[in-house]
Length: 302
Ligand SMILES: Cc1cc2nc3c(=O)[nH]c(=O)nc-3n(C[C@H](O)[C@H](O)[C@H](O)COP(=O)(O)OP(=O)(O)OC[C@H]3O[C@@H](n4cnc5c(N)ncnc54)[C@H](O)[C@@H]3O)c2cc1C
Image: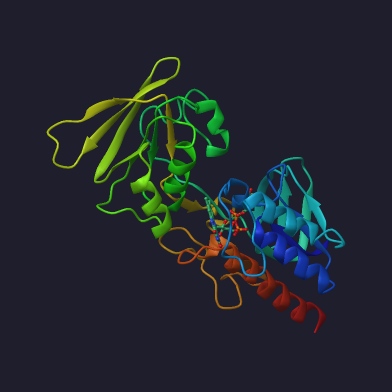
């Protein structure tokens, strides 16, 4: 029996664990991946906007977070597969057969990448679908297509343009949603072509990806463009499958919380991106962890 079980060890979960530990709560942090850090592990550009720390990429910031939890006493279990969660009973069942009980649960499961749901997207995983621009050297010298119009798409297009002769960024909107500095760099980079008001309908290939089929607004019919790599960055969806029927969610599936990060279920909290549809950020996630921990400690310790 723990005071607190935290599910997810991104910035939110790590912050909550750090605070819970400092406040004297017996805390267990569960992470499904081998490594902690969540989305930070897929940030390859410098992080300049987290006050007090400048990091050359997300992994460096993650390392600093981990460093700052080194003297803590909370338990961290990675590679954990959660079978089910009973929020009312505050019971977490693991696929290994173990059952965990706690007084409070903090949901910090963050977001996952959305998929397009088009033919070829799953079929060519590992055969031309680019999982991360961190793997860009495997695509050096190849023509690639980036799908999406936000920060992640823009960032990936810029990184791929360092090694690829042509990068075509295809997005639905009239204008990119990416932050200004990214958009400016995209438009001045001679390797990158931007197709606005366009949709990729399918990814084509046999052994490997050879082309994408694109539909452009105003064009009479779709056309095929030869590429050997495709990366999809069309946004995120909250990881709420475990708790979907047990706490209030908004229309997009994010956990509804009050200002103290409390969900609609007593002694169950949600923090970070999974409960922040409007402004998902590292400081938001870290702050939510502190808020939830302080409230739990004040209830349990008085
Ligand atoms: C390319 C990119 C650039 C970004 N740049 C910035 C920036 O400059 N500044 C900024 O403030 N923010 C930035 N962000 C956003 C920032 O990374 C997120 O807001 C932050 O990581 C959210 O933290 P989190 O802990 O809520 O969620 P996440 O980082 O998503 O972590 C959630 C964790 O929960 C784990 N998990 C999920 N389900 C389960 C389960 N069932 N069991 C166990 N564990 C589970 C996941 O594996 C993951 O480790 C960027 C994001 C991206 C992708």
